[in-house]
Length: 506
Ligand code: GLU
Image 1 (cartoon, rainbow, N blue to C red):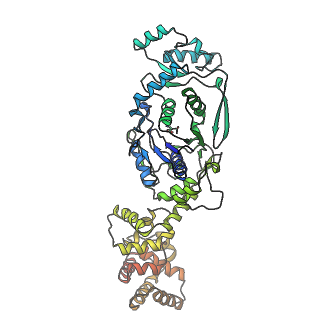
Image 2: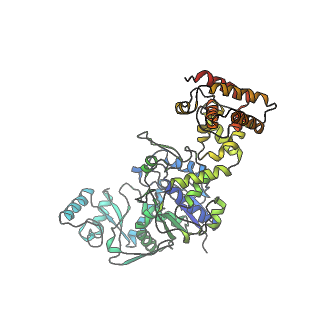
């Protein structure tokens, strides 16, 4: 069997959509399962759509995700260069080869000529297509004499090279996910292979590079399925063995209505890009999984299951497990709906499994944003106490800020509901009880405080919530005695005193 070599071939036209990340992931899983190579190729032949920073973004995204390439624009390899704009010289000779063997032709029609044809066809309620039926009436090397063609090229007249589909022939695409897809060549437009700006189009460059880079399988998004017949024909025209194709189902909006678009994410409250992206032109910011506090392992696991499953109930799978279980046959034909709750569930699960050192590092980064640099042991204790409640890394700060900063204001609603005249007296008593537990022991303190509250026949919720309000500033957080244990009795007492001083009710 031919060595498995697959590629991820993004165009640097903006941030990488999460659907693209899934395409790359499936390529990676397939490559590694077959001891093959996984390649990053940048397809930047359309210079008008080039966006500065996009290539670097793509590379950084895969670094963050922990999906490594074997060859690519950033690491080189023996099939390089891996950026199409650096391979420009290669493509013309292949375009000319097709002209010479009758599979392509020069076309000199100006954009205005073509526009006029289109308008004319529209007026007759038809659609204009540059194809077997119309090409005979257009300005190209099939209608001009060789001398005229020569002369125009010599005079630097702009031209394109178009593919010449055979008339009325059936093109067969074998797709590993969709089976056989057939299309009649009469339905297809003689696609431009080489543009007047001296650059190949995506189609030509893609095929030439896949061939020269010995790509064995092309695994890509469904949006490229309409291009597959042309690609199959190009392989035939060159006399090259075509790779096997697999077109992946779309990633859909959560309600299943249409493709998950760039705009959906921030509109619906989840990122559609791996990393935060700032548009260099408009300055518009789109959120990223990394900055939103997802762990890369969770993102990978979640994405793997959007369109594929191992055929069992198993959901938690790390990268090596995915490599061993992945199979193209189990990729579904229909689109996969993005599910935010599931994404949260995966992230929560991976936070529980993450090593303390990792959570510590991420938590410290959150704290640095607030200029807080606590002791590592203290942080580890907080992490272990809180991680069960946390779905995203920034919540370590949002839910735990009171461990570092004493509250200065207190939730009004809770005050209204819980803090009654006389509450201060009871909290002072609790403060004294805490002093009496020497050395401090959370179980013992718990029992004594409970005993006191029960003895006073007071409402437990009222006192405990007021107590919590003093320490946390709100009615949230983990077990009170765990909090006291971490804050220390002295700090707890300070906070009680401050609350009593600040909260005045009558
Ligand atoms: N450059 C194409 C893209 O941006 C690659 C399509 C393919 O994999 O053939 O998605």
